[in-house]
Length: 102
Length: 386
Image 1 (cartoon, rainbow over the protein chains, first blue to last red):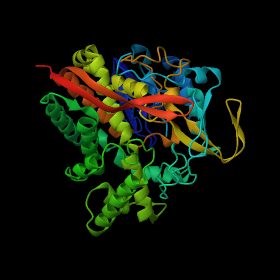
Image 2 (image 1 turned 90 degrees about the horizontal axis):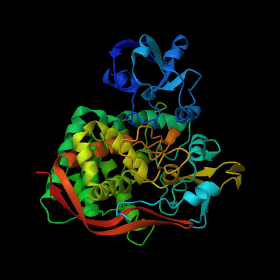
Image 3 (image 1 turned 30 degrees about the horizontal axis):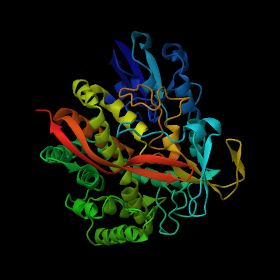
């Protein structure tokens, strides 16, 4: 079980627990505002954009090339950007904090 | 070749030069064929604009049959974003449970209808009806209204053999004008009334702006949904094992929807007007010329997709652009995805197999390329599971 915290654009903090699936699915199940996951998690829509808090980047690892290509053309992307449909939940993520991108 | 196959006519040009050329009513179009180029160009709205003369970014061009600007489709940022903010919540309603329950009932009913028949012409007796009935939910108008739209036939703008049919377009425009007047007289909870009551930058939308949104809603979701639904039926006819797989593993339905939409790419391409002399794929693109973003080609780009010409039902990473990309991504995508999702679930549950009895391909003439986009007609027999 991993504890995951999402911080929405209006600073609402939501901490949830998960053990499988993607972070996008977890966010959608818990109605985290700003995470739509329109494409169901196949890296096609970029509606699950989050910023990983810098001190937690090691937990999530790096984006794949396909994911980077998507983020490259997102005006709000920065070096901490991830599409959270591409992050699988595991114990390694425990304690991670993610800010939902605008 | 299986009847459901949609070959990729762009491969050679995509690999060799990255672009194709098409003449369209003496307003030529340079078609961009590679996924990365398509995305970059879609994102660069300053150099590749949508807010040109109304109808010009559509291929074939509609400048001769339409003056109304489609909104937010033919508007560039920042105004585009203002319009989009107004319409976006309405077009996300398909995520609501009540909406999905109604759509499920509609799709359940039409699948039952066709299961009872010995043969069904899918385009007019299944896809068009399904699309029109579902549109009553998106517009929040009475179900009976769909009979009027079904009566218009399969294409709002196109008649058989005629790429652009001004008379047919006028039927739609006159209908929308009358509906807007009706909604002014007697407001309801439908999309016309909601739009008439909406404000952008502190000003109420004008009748012309409302008309622009409504034309987009009708035109954008008609051929595309009809092709996606018809092609799905052909696909499952050729692949009964996929039906049983979806029945046994319904959790892959979302991925299957994305993959079928990638493979079908119901909208082949969309144009942009170049605002300054520039280059695309080392090819000069002059100011005031047109380029198009070829979603159908980008979705078969072998540099991005493994086995691009195969339907991999549970494809995990699928960065397709079938719903467009960037600011102008498809407003109706949420509705379209729900239709496909519920259709696949319903077919998997109720249908054992589908036999193709007769088929006539719908092939688009893109000058340099001929692309099968679906079927003019597809006659099948649906066999029930039980």
